[in-house]
Amino acid sequence: MLTAIFIFVAFLAILNTAAEFARDLMMFQQNSYRADRYGRWLSESGDTTSMARLCGMFVFLLALAGFSFRLPATVIVGIFCAWNCFTLGRKKYKKPLVWTMRARRIIAVMWALTVIVAAAGVLLFGGGNLDLDLFVVAECMLLCYCASHIIVMLANAILTPVEKSINRKYYREAEDTLRSMPALKIIGVTGSYGKTSTKHYLYRILSEQYQTLMTPGNFNTTLGVIRTVREHLKPYHEVFIVEMGAKQIGDIKEICDLVHPTVGIVTAVGPQHLESFKSIANVQSTKFELVDSLPSDGLAVVNNDFEKIADRPVANVPCERYAVANVTDEVDYYAEDIRYSAAGTTFTAVCRHDGHRLELTTRLVGECNISNLLAAVAVARYMGVTDDRIRYAVEKIEQVEHRLSIKKIPGGYTIIDDAYNSNPVGSAMALDVLAAMPGKRILLTPGMVELGTEQFDRNRDFGQKAATCCDIAIVVGHYNRDAILEGLKAGGMPETAIRRVDTFAEAQALLGSLAGNGDTVLYENDLPDTFK
Image (cartoon, helix red, strand yellow):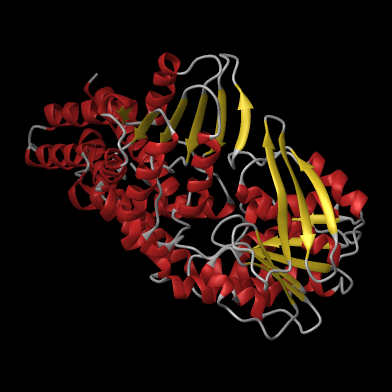
């Protein structure tokens, strides 16, 4: 009977460690498998000193101190492990762990390290007695649970040479595939924001005339592009649209060195990822790595609505500049007669240097979407797509999910979903769209992240503008709460119109009592699990 208790507790301890390993690996994956970013998240989140972690350390030390009284010590370990397994099992994550081959390799090494710790513990402290050995195993599992952050980073470090070797192999395969298709037209799209929407719009237009492929989802890193080439690029493709993301200097150049684009679009240069870039000048130079890589017979299309694009000369390649707000004599493409309605937007795309005018109708709303469409139209015309095909494609473009998309809810109210990766420019435009809506206007937001030293000020400004654009503001979480509340109050929003909740689930439940027929709710940003 006693042995059965020791077996059961050892099993619970293993299960508890497995659940924690999966959670830590998920967070490590969300931090791009980078130890520096993961370490920063640990520091900011306080996960190393969470209540569960501290309880685990206390139980470990208590059981260790009660080594001579193995049965009660084992029961205490079992109670903690059962409670923590239940707690971890109930947690819901916005972006759960994706079991990629790399994730599987890391978890395998983590368990190999854990087995080594357990074996060493049994050899050093076990006595050949099964009950004692099981107690030592349970204690070792609890120790590994407490040290799981270290174990996941150690496993990643051990695998670094393996990952580099695998990546080099995949890189060469992608390079060979691209080299075998010399007629393939490659278009790069980058920017602090707007690049994903622009990629989708351009893909929809070019697909009217060409066999076109784009990088799917958020495959905007070098490895994502490599995977797209290896898994999706076919000999019949004529155009390949490559979204290029960056979080540090050199990221865009690395992708360009692989794909060698001949056309490049820069949608924005703004204060995005300032925690890693450190300065707006570094953001500018990184985004323009795409333009700098283009051949002299290619084309750069850049957004002059941004100061750090408008003041950046381009001499190595012909350049078309576009704008919606900052229309100057330097701008080649701009929009006129913009008219919004419940059905979408109509506007006229004007090309200054040849006087061409193209009236367009789209289901999309918001100045940012008109800007993204202008970039797509400029490239489509350069590629020889006819006006009729451009007009038809723009009319059929679907709203990109979570990027200022509008949908009706059975309850009768309208949702403006701008939950993906909010930024200062895009959030301001989303608020303008909300302000133009009839009925009660409700904002639901956790604010913006990864803005470095500008984090507080930008969220305060966002809150101040929101106070003039909505009737009720629901502030989610704690990460930006103080800044947004300060801005809302500075903008004149009464305290009775402000709601504070800890999670999106609570916010959505609250909407049931706040939103009714004819009202509009704006979801502005949705922080990943790495933020609270």
